[in-house]
Structures are given as C-alpha cells and as structure tokens.
Length: 117
Image (cartoon, rainbow, N blue to C red; front, side, top):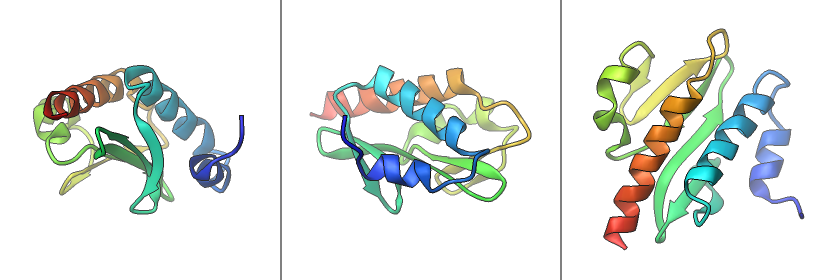
C-alpha cells in the first residue's frame, strides 16, 4: 500500500495522538469502506457521494471530530460531557477515546449521505 496524504498527516502528529488517529481512521473505514479518504480543511476527511462525511484531527491536548452539519446534533446527549464548538467536539488525550460513539456518528453520517446519493 502506498502512503497518502492522511498517512503523512498522522505520521506528523505526536506519539500520543498517532494511535488515537489510527483508531478513528480504522473505525471510519469499517463503517464506510466506500468513503474517499482525503485531506479537507487541513484534516483527515472522508467523503461519501462526493460530500464530506466527517473530519478529525489532532490538537495539542485533544482529538477533534467534525461530523458536520448534522452528526453532532443527533448525538447531543452523548457528546454533552465533551467540550464542543460549532460543529466540533474535543476528545481529550487524558480520557479514553469513545470509539463506539465515533462509530455510531460515522454510521449516521454515512447513511445520511448514502440516502442523498
């Protein structure tokens, strides 16, 4: 397998962030194997039917997940314990990454886009 831009993005992150990013990447690929993996807005991003499904990336103290425009609203209660911005949620490095929740968010977004296709 050849390296791509997402491989390069992950390789450039901290030792703390890399395995978390790879875990999220694996979940997204399992949920939406047909998704196109790209760098969008400077972050690892996935497209289904030509439209963005979600983005994620590393910051100094957290992993950011961006499942806009509807992914966060649907999981508002489950995401309420995490710091959020408009269309983003932060998963701090000092807490376990909620991979099962991320899986459900990714499934929700992929299914939305599959219906639109």
